View (cartoon, rainbow, N blue to C red):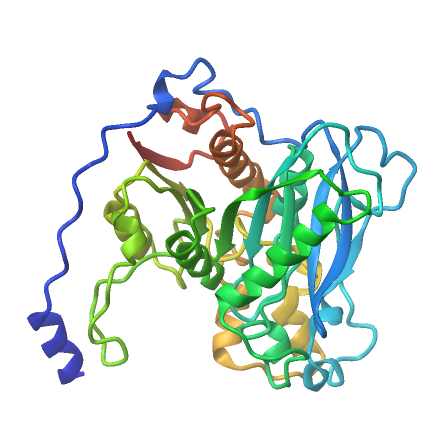
Length: 386
């Protein structure tokens, strides 16, 4: 404790960069306050699973023709499919809560394109399908979204051996991008349908950090979105010299930070820090009565009627480490909103930002300051520069 206090007293946080005043002010756009992207878009959504290296997979969602999903069976996933054997063997077969999406496996690809490419990076002790409420939504609005398994931090590594070699985040991301390039250049239905010249990384929690690193290391990334992820400037005994990611000082790279007001994992102060240290065009969205998971992932809604994932584990007599319990439950309990209540806010802001940055929208739509009053009784906090 003395070491922590001493570090805190001896280290000064660097100053914030000058406030960005260049670029397009979204308040001046004709549709500045239109909540256009809360609902599913004009495309139906197809999905395929690709193996990006032996033992490691990625999910790919893509726009399908509107109406193509009528009469088709939509995808439902099961959390059991992502558990290591140590946990799987401890759970009775009856503990198998599903999560339904509106994607359909193997649908044809929509006319038009090429469609912008989004890379989604999941969080710690999680899995590639953790935020299908968002990834399918983005596909319905004209994006191809790829989400790989980061076994290095995923739930598959909890008490088990990952089924693929350990790699840095950037290397996993590159494997996923390479797989998508293969889909685009191959003879399959996605041939020529994906714009692989640019990459738009978004990520949750640890995946938000991945997105920051990709923005700093890749020339094909000009903007990114970090969900429930921030920057700490407080020295600790484990991180005595915290640093600000260098990419934040680049005025030519743009970022959206989005988080829950009640997040106890990526606390609000760190996300505000990240926004303040960002030198390019930037946005900060804070969703009320939301923690780490309810607004940003599917996780709180899986088995909610049975107490959620941790409740199901307890009822089966399974003991989980405290850090896993804290991660899994953050945001899932009252007074926080249930996911479907706040997902429209997250869907709108992320879709609007990506459509503008990718050029699908010539001007920002629904990113003006007045947008906060357009979500019914739930009012997010929002600021932007310029």
